[in-house]
Image (cartoon, rainbow, N blue to C red; front, side, top):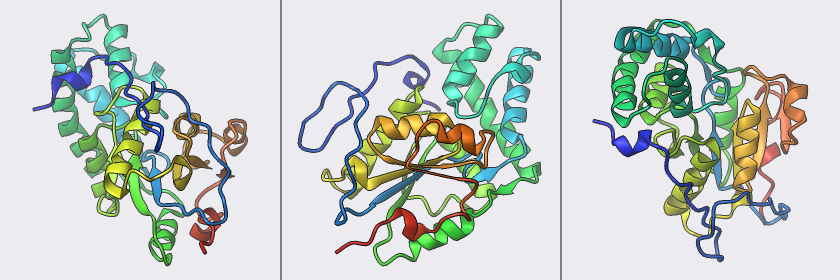
Length: 265
């Protein structure tokens, strides 16, 4: 049973900045990365960054609305890349004039995970280019960072997708659409969760966010993290560069783990 408060609009949580106490939610300016700083946490988006599911998520989304709400049209008009599951459902409910009640969100997601499991299992898909080598490189470092997720998927949806391609286990923490409807606030939740795991002294500049859309770049900047943009999703490399990530590459074969983690003294 899902907690119904996840499917209602809520105030944005604060972004706790170490040494400053809790403040009103706001973007955090990234600080220069000193030579003695180390990257302690790397947060990955899922769709188009870690894996391609061959459109399984979109098909599951459409199938759920068709079977549960008798709503068959409109999915093809929705932009999925970089969006959160909650925002997508809210938009589709609005298109069909279905009340966006907590009960309808719960009804959708309880059926959606069933269809997602079915469609992902039947999909070809696979890991995005360079992902295996990049993750192996991070874990092989003398001081490997903690690996986490920062995604617009609900948590169970994320697990279904990543288990299909053998990628769920490496991630020790994460933040999901269950945490908030807005992606920037999911990033804030990831920062807070990272601090609970690694210590309150975890600084934003010790985090790298990896993603394939402008939304990923924006939410990484929102918490003051470094951002690695990869053009393995729908966005072009030049399009990603316009949003000024710290690194922008065609795929994760184009740089090594050592290139984003500076040597430490």
